[in-house]
Length: 320
Image (cartoon, rainbow, N blue to C red; front, side):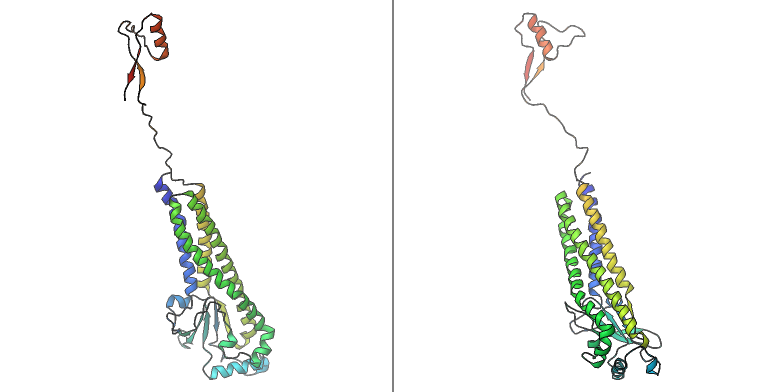
């Protein structure tokens, strides 16, 4: 396989790595503001979220509070926030920030009105967002239901963010180092090592995000479902995230394949042997011409001439 075959062998994992890098970037721009003034995110960013809390149906609840499986202090606090216009219709959580907005009751069209500032240690705290921090509602309800789930989410959110960041950096390094793999199997070996590390981090990040936000959805459903506050995970974000994992695994396997195969050397390279200068060739003796059908070649011919008692040297020096 020549250089062209080597290039084709490297091209496949390079494209897979690039696709994985794009997926990680998409995960990281979800719910990210388009500017520094917390403006709404782009349409692509709006559709990518890990977790969504829908509070648009909060007003559609039974009149008898005794029928609700929720603490009255939390309900009254939320009612106060809704009356003051501080409770938005939905909240979407990304990796670095969250966005909130309104929902048209007739058409169901959602419009993002505000996005929070991005933070490297971001985690979504509904009590802070709903202005219920350190309130009686948080102390009573949070200890039993929301608090435990939120504490778990807070602890692993930093690891999750750093895992995605490291996976992004390793993906970029994988592409850069991958160019050297075109010329050498050693380049493929180094790239394979980097790819393995990238796969480990993106897999850890995706697994952590899936488990964490799945837990958060369960906590919201348990604690707030009776007052029609719903929660769900973003299918688009999950799809993009696990697609990044798939691309990472596939690229690693192809990088490993390029270490074992695709040497870049042609198996049909021709080797020509030229005559060295000052070689000897057998010539016919003028005194003893060769008989018909007899060849005087090699050392045997020389011995025959010497047996005839002649001093003629049967070899000539050939200057090439």
